[in-house]
Image 1 (spheres, rainbow, N blue to C red):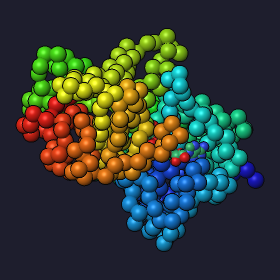
Image 2 (cartoon, rainbow, N blue to C red):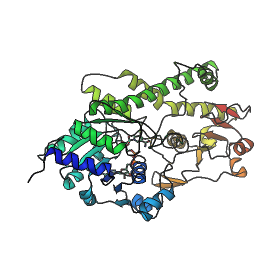
Image 3 (cartoon, rainbow, N blue to C red):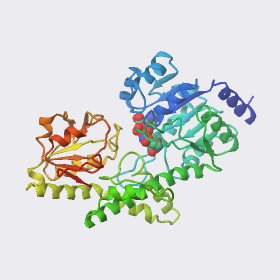
Image 4 (cartoon, rainbow, N blue to C red):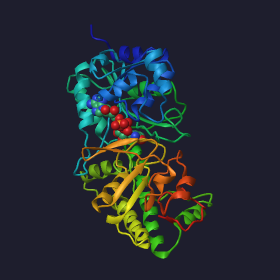
Length: 441
Ligand SMILES: NC(=O)c1ccc[n+]([C@@H]2O[C@H](COP(=O)([O-])OP(=O)(O)OC[C@H]3O[C@@H](n4cnc5c(N)ncnc54)[C@H](O)[C@@H]3O)[C@@H](O)[C@H]2O)c1
């Protein structure tokens, strides 16, 4: 006999309260892996799916590839307690009561959203779907995705949302490398397709989170995430534009921001840099402007911020050319060391990294470029393996200019200052240090 709506939701609610629900997580990256760890910590059994065999092998050997997750946590939950089971096969999800989707949402070459990862995850999930499942999308995406790509896809199979299955959207807000805010203490926004879905998803997240903000629709939750990241991109764009202006006027932007920050209300500091990177800030606003165009709405702030932020690596390069000029050098006769290749401090993530963009621009100018990054010992570029140099006095002395591109904490900046011929500090790591060697962004 077919189960009633009450049966499915009550059954899942009861399992959730007893921590007996099995949670599938699709995509074990910067978002999915920490989420799996948090659920495991409060006693749930996790089925983690990832298509990357390399990641699966690392996890099965007790190794983490994410700076915010320790090897020890992987060892405890994957190897010792076995509360996180890892696989590349969706088959194990047949046993899942809940499935969280945390796959990438990048851009296509045309800068339009590439939602193919969500589509392919859903294609596989549909094969193992069973009535009663709660599906939660955590990936950042444009408003409408949860309904169109998740709920409708299951409804096409003949199931009714809120009755036979449940759907919610809860954007992840994790800030990799931030020691103060991680998956377990960042308030979560939650929207669901139906009241029952909302209740179930709330019960799930409240297992480890105190602060959950419920919105009325999934679209509000989808849009909230895009507002947050668009706010960031636009404000970084503003401060980057101010930086270029201050450079013309001979004013130190870092001191200006520090002074403005003393205002206890109405001002929030954002900092300039050689560009913006990562899988979120440069991309997410474009998800929004893409969707808005379907409503004949054109987001001028997003276009402007994208333009300004996208041109910062070029601005950094032009400042570097002035530094080299002072040394009577050109790019093609110079040796440059980039200090940091990750997109921001204290992460090992190279996606959309402005440092990488600067690396490429310098190669185009025939400069000799090396990099040092304690968190990224090597990376692939143009089919070649590029390795980090080791940061030693005699090695530093070989370069005409050291460019601080990423402000990692674990770098001996004093050693660099002592030995470098010249320094271009795009991150203000030498705040307050007076030296003729240093030029700031
Ligand atoms: N990285 C961040 O700081 C951050 C913060 C908040 C939100 N987000 C959002 O979260 C989502 C995930 O981002 P991320 O940084 O964790 O990405 P990631 O690339 O680190 O992780 C995604 C994982 O999904 C796997 N994958 C891809 N397609 C798959 C499929 N069909 N089935 C199973 N696994 C698959 C990949 O191998 C990868 O390991 C994105 O939408 C992103 O915008 C990211």
